[in-house]
Amino acid sequence: MSEPFESDVPTQPRDRREHGGASARPNDDELALRTERERVEAGLEPYDSDDVPPAADATVPYDVTQDDTIQEIGGIGARQEDEGETVPLSEDNPFPPTRYAEQ
Image 1 (cartoon, helix red, strand yellow):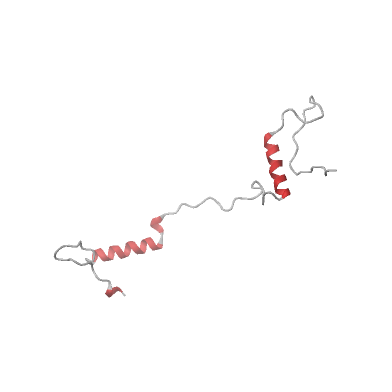
Image 2 (tube, rainbow, N blue to C red):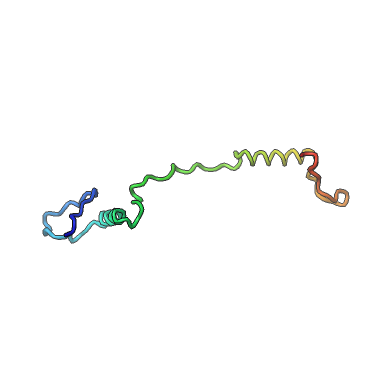
């Protein structure tokens, strides 16, 4: 004999005008919820996604201009422009600047 089905999902209220058998108009949401919970109980799925809270709060928008690394790179670029290290290559200046003094 099979065990009686017990679930913590509330059953759909019965319409007294219907017969005592299965309802002619089953609730699809209730059926989907019961099916998912049965799959979890049977071990076919690891968990019920409705029972698990979201992993994190809403994502905080990322502002690139506030990143320390980006600000540091921008500062280095500004210093190099101020010191004339970023002049374009030409016949008078055929080689890129050296970085030996920075290290």
